[in-house]
Image 1 (cartoon, rainbow over the protein chains, first blue to last red):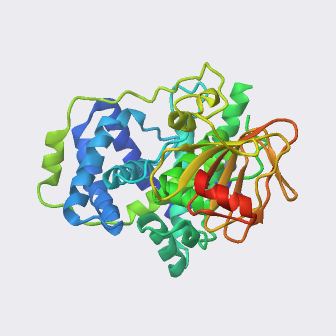
Image 2 (tube, rainbow over the protein chains, first blue to last red; image 1 turned 180 degrees about the vertical axis):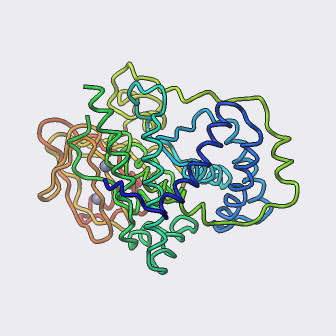
Image 3 (cartoon, chains in turn blue, red; image 1 turned 45 degrees about the horizontal axis):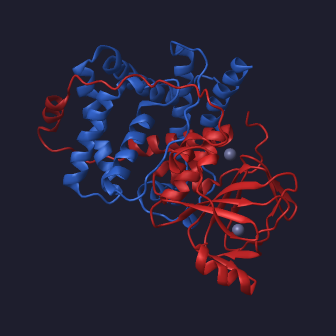
Length: 190
Length: 216
Ligand SMILES: [Zn+2]
Ligand SMILES: [Zn+2]
């Protein structure tokens, strides 16, 4: 992997890093100011996501509230070596949306038994942030029509057949990060 | 270990699993395969991360006073850190599938559907159907085509389809363009989880009659 300094990426990963700090303060210190900062940033985004998915404004607002209180309650499960704050919140919002529609249950995969790593290692946290920043970069560099398709797949009710026309999603960096973790895990379990 | 898996979930299924727009039966097969497959687990994480990026870029202002309202709702209740339970019982089936069966393979309520083939339909939402199939060693499934998408995940034994071999953990993805006759490996009965969003098209006359009774 390429660790060359890149001003743009640094700025972006620096930004997400701030959210990791806030999230860790919510998790470890039950810090309400940190929660308020996360709320100001993410609640409108959750609301926007739900409205793009076809939810009306009133319900989207209520759900955004629910997602943020879930974040407070489940903060203990946040692991910055496994997901960025935005990714973690996305998964909560997605699951909330599924509950709301009461249509299709979505079972989760069996959890991996992670190796004996009691403390999240700072190096892994930073590594994931850099990869996330690179993903942000790569997605924003996609041609407009490609980007539209991806948004439709995530926000709309595109069928699987329609989704299968989406190609060239830039996932490389994120994949490598997780593969690395899995390799380590397997090594530890030998 | 999962290094031997060669046939994976297709990207359309993984993207729709991440976005939360799949019918329940497909969610079940995705969760079951990911439980067995590190490659697809990594891809699923990556697709969640794409969701995170898109979330960052959607924005609709909240109404006045929403933060105060949320702060007032914060309780002292805390969900404990994720405790990952080591499975002490060795099981043929990953947890998501066990939850639908209500136990392991020995608690499946099989129904014979002819020619030694048995099935058990799992209860899912209407958009797609999920069933367990048990095919006797060496036996062939009736020749069929597809009106929609079919995913077949091997849980035990193996099957051969044309020149492809599917063993435990492998998924076969078949669409409208596929006409096939999967044949169970000779060494043991093959147990699969099969998911479809449209009825299959059978070639022979007898299977077509049978179809009415077994709801394939
Ligand atoms: Zn796979
Ligand atoms: Zn088929």
